[in-house]
Length: 112
Ligand SMILES: [Zn+2]
Image (tube, rainbow, N blue to C red):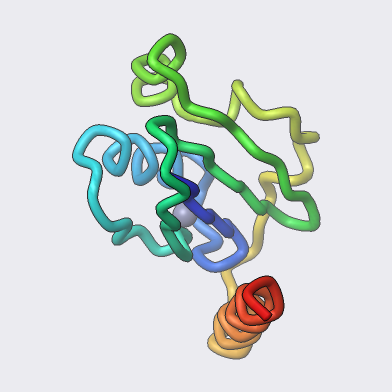
């Protein structure tokens, strides 16, 4: 499963996004967090989180080994992002629409 997270969508404190993602890992199923944009079944057992935060994007593979730690400690310390990447301002309605539109465009392009 690939989980697409874009923290620019929620603008929350990183800790609250970490809790959201931890819940998703624990319960499985569809994401319902503000910054969880999509979940794509890629046929793999492990969860690959594609995390966009500020102007940065990184991937984090959740395996049986690091899963518990990610749930309890949060994903921040597992990703290779500079500190400023996590300082995301609260988005406006326009920002949210733009990010969602860009994502839909991207996935459409990928399919064609
Ligand atoms: Zn969030």
